[in-house]
Length: 380
Image (tube, rainbow, N blue to C red; front, side, top):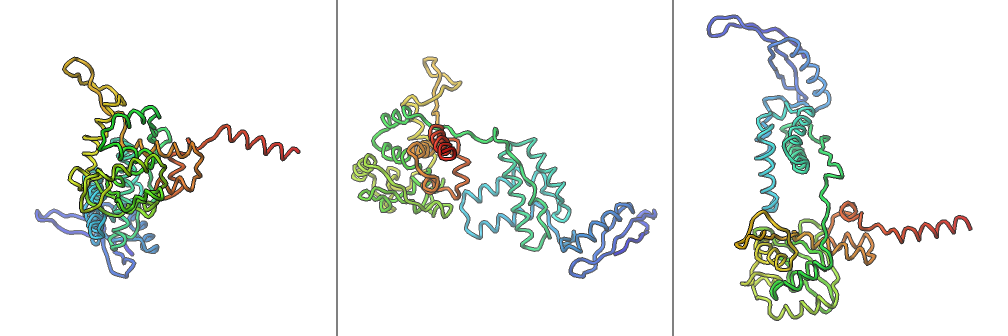
């Protein structure tokens, strides 16, 4: 490796000069890079020499921009048959949050300080949740570029967006009175699905993709074997943990037995289809069934808009995911162990269950009893 001064005359005959770094990359191929100032050349050479020795140097000529790398990352996801919702999210993260800020940057010139600056800019202009998603997406983009040999290291790997516990979404659980009101005001075509959601904690996609052959009314269980995405396409659960069997009690067995007799028939054999027997779309489930039921039941909050009589118009209080929280909280009150709770919720790890519902698992009376018994044994 060496640095030499280069002089030449430009088109107007004026003398120009620059500092040229000559070096060989990790593969032994001769490379060069030009700088206007000698000290910049020396600083770069010191860094490049170390990178070459560690096998993590990528010449600018072999590098691509972050925007090009993002397209390659998305193309791979499409080729692997990732879900439409996942591809949509990847494209939005790239288009809205990554490309506008660092899209023109070459991967070879991207450093951890540059990624930290990207992170800081995201935190200043986006929510912490979105900033975290964008940073993780950039890391995935660099991992894919590294796999393709377009960059030697992932400089975003150690960069994270830490969300204080106070910033994390607090789960809101409908009260028992609210749940009973919802069931009273649900029409006959929606009540079975609503009751199933309340007592099983199934996600919207799992409810809309549930098959009758997976509902064992004799054995009292519901098995999740597939799901319907937001576009109505049927596919497998998103993870291995999504495949599960959940016990159901006599009340819901009776409800589903009656519902099966009048349920719209379709070629897919869905337990909760639309009126034609096809897949019920998530947006229709909310706008035509769940939200209106809440308003009728009085489980609603006022908006800034007024009706014809000058009264505030009401909107639904809860999202469908609140019913999932209701099921979990009911199981916890009945003393279900953590392993079964994780399994029934379809969580991929116990840690996710603890992070979400750990505050509900605390049992002050039980803890006091355990502490008293332990004390008695120790001091006996």
